[in-house]
Amino acid sequence: MPRPTHEVEYEQMLLSRHELRHRARALDRSAYVLLSRIRVQGPMSIGELSDAFGLDASTLNRQTAAAMRAGLVERIPDPAGGIARKFRITGKGERMLDDERETITGGLEQVMADWSDEDIAAFASYLRRFNMDIERLSGRPWPRP
Image (cartoon, rainbow, N blue to C red; front, top):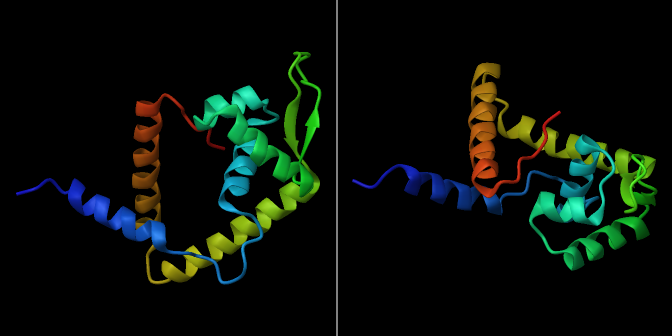
């Protein structure tokens, strides 16, 4: 009998195809993740973002350039006095991130309308554990608020 990890893989594949929004995306996935990380960690350099995401600097240069053009982030001197300039989320970026998160949360509320608060909390706990184990294995922990 195969381990239940086969079931997890299949359900994860199905989950990745669902969209929990009922309107056009305000932010693409990369901008949403980028802004989320900068919000929780504070201003970050390209090198810090590269380490955090496990992506090469050229990919992050493209993502941050697009976010700057959209007015979502701005470059600032390192608040700690370092040489590298850092990216900080702008007011517009904060508002768009909040709006996107509210839309996604609204979709989750619809999906989980018949779930008890205890079931939702248990599901969130398992997702957190799953993500934290991935982060531990990759060596790239994600800060949590």
